Amino acid sequence: MRILLLVHSFNSLTQALFVALRAAGHTVSVELDIADSVAAEAVALFRPDLILAPFLKRAIGAAIWRRYLCLVVHPGVAGDRGPSSLDRAILDGEAQWGVTVLQADAEMDAGPVWGEARFPMRAASKSSLYRKEVCAAALLAVAQALERLVAGAGPLTAQPARAPLRPLLRQPERRIDWQADSTALVLAKLRSADGVPGVLDSLFGQPCYLSDAHAATPASLALVGGAAGDVVARRDDAVLRRTVDGGVWIGHARRAAAAGQAGPAPFKLALAHCFAADFRALPELAVPTRRASAEWAALRYWEDGGAGFLSFDFHNGAMSTEQCQRLAQAVREARLRPIRVLVLLGGEDFFSNGIHLNRIEASESPADESWRNINAMNDLALDILSATDQLTVSALRGNAGAGGAFLALAADLVWACEPVLLNPHYKNMGNLYGSEYWTYSLPRRVGAEAARALMQNRLPWSAGAALAAGLVDALLPAGLAALEQRAIALARDPAFAARLAEKRARRARDEAHKPLQSYRDEELARMHRNFYGFDPSYHVARFHFVHKMPHAWTPRHLAVHRNPVLKAPPTTYE
Image 1 (cartoon, one colour):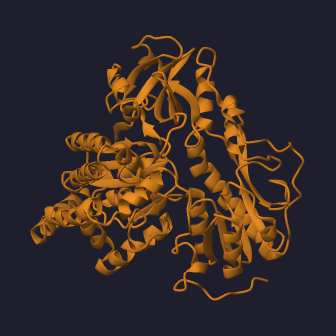
Image 2: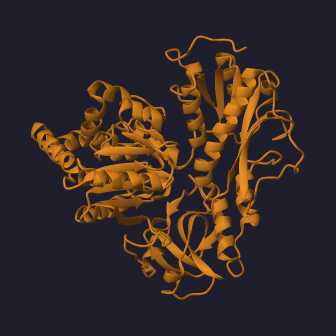
Image 3: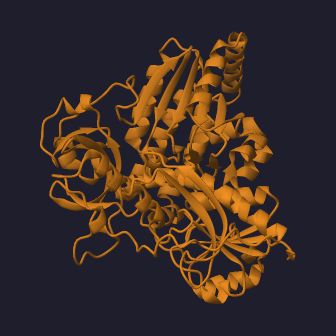
């Protein structure tokens, strides 16, 4: 089939469907929903058999859905209607939720149902649920819809009359009453607004939008005083705020724009940078990396069966200079432990997405901070590459992109859980050349010619495609248990000593042929031009990304119908 994805942005769900539909043999093109006239032009150019809308912020124009079959992926169960479906499911404490594929018509979310899949709700943020459960359910529901379409079976059912259209969830419904709301309710409100729009509140006397919340343990709370609503401590880049029956760690905030403020609106930052002076004045409540999993912090380390496991759960996978330095220190400490295998786990939602663009944008000199950040990423990669007393594994439980994808290649082995998506390229961020020693690690995996071709790619990869290409060494089921079992088996493998000896010999041969420092110097010479040179493409692209500027056009690598090189000949679906 010829399937046009009409979307607000090429987000995680759209990417997952894009990859899955192409793998199933469909011709897929993407059009960003910029204006009705632009969408109509895209439809005329591509002549799709089906228009699929996995992520839109407004209704499809009648001129399109009256002429073409348009299926909308709605993150709610059949009968649910409205733009804040997942937000409300979290606030309402739903035990089960789902995704429906609806036919677009004159009334929002009221058309016939073509596909449906359900999932148990997890105690997690909206963003995390969307990337994991919603994404997995959407793939199932869309596959069901396509099967019915191909079979000529028509929709499953008309939309059941469960509830009227529920409007966009507004800030008054999310408002936290710190003097009355329980910790569970505070977490639900913050989690329901995670990412966008955040919960309007205040910190240190300044109005701001809060997001990125984690429950505090009784052990941490016992170390601090304070009344409900008080900000009492800091850890990593987050602050601890008391509730009536406990407390929550809050990691990020976006300052509210001042009345009449000119220029771009404030953007989201870690609390350590959003309120730097007030943050530093708080007492630090540090914890060791070896601790119980319930005690929140960005880094955690544990050992089992000769394997050491290091998780680094940085918000949205972005890694600032300071976070890279803290992680590098943790890697060096783990390398001193009596372990055979060191497993780098990243976070549950992201392994890593490379340098921290928001932090860079907020700095006094974005070019200087970019330079510091990429060097800190390289120092971290070097600590992994030079770990010759253990076998190292990058275990991707969540997605990886840009420098984070290439950071993973610094390890001896790369394992990925099956739902993971990789974006192993830098070019979308203003044609960045990239570093993290990719010019060493990538060709040794895929060969020089394939490496050159891959670096021109701007599209997402499934974990399966990455396995076939040699970027990934093994696919594992989602979850931590399978990763732990495989790592322990690797540590106990009778051939472990021989594998480690071969690794050391290979590293020595490679270093004699061309030192790692040479790769780094060559990469950074190109990155220096990206940061400090005459071409401002990187700085413009970063500004647009951080400030979420609306798209003016669809990139040609996505819009097959607008790219004469990529455009496929029309076919007819029957």
